[in-house]
Amino acid sequence: MPIYEYFCLQCRRRFRKLVGMVAGQTAVACPRCGGSEVSRLISRFSRLRGEDETLDAMAEELEGLDENDPKAVRRMMRTLSREMGEDMDEEELEQALLEAEEGEAEEAPE
Image (cartoon, helix red, strand yellow):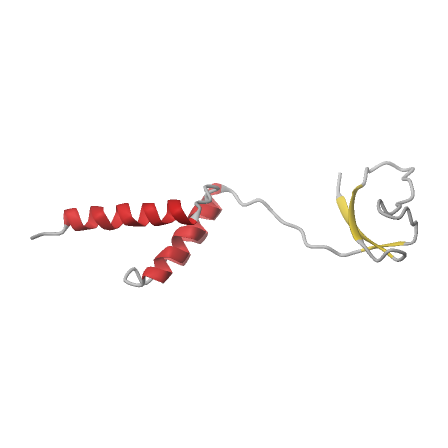
């Protein structure tokens, strides 16, 4: 069942309505004012990407990453965590970056 966006011409509010796919559809009314003068809007849609598509897109973004630019690395870390569904807050992100830096320092040849 699709969700449509409407604009109420009386109270000038935008709202969404889940619309069934049956032959005898009911009239759409604004949930705020009850007005029946509504206009259906053209809205965006989204498509869920599979994990493979997500990983491919991230790999392409990583190709141009300047690993010596801390801001670029932080930006990419935020993007990676968001895309993988594991949004990190600033504190978690800083902790992960510090741990990564410490690990690199331990591995560096003397």
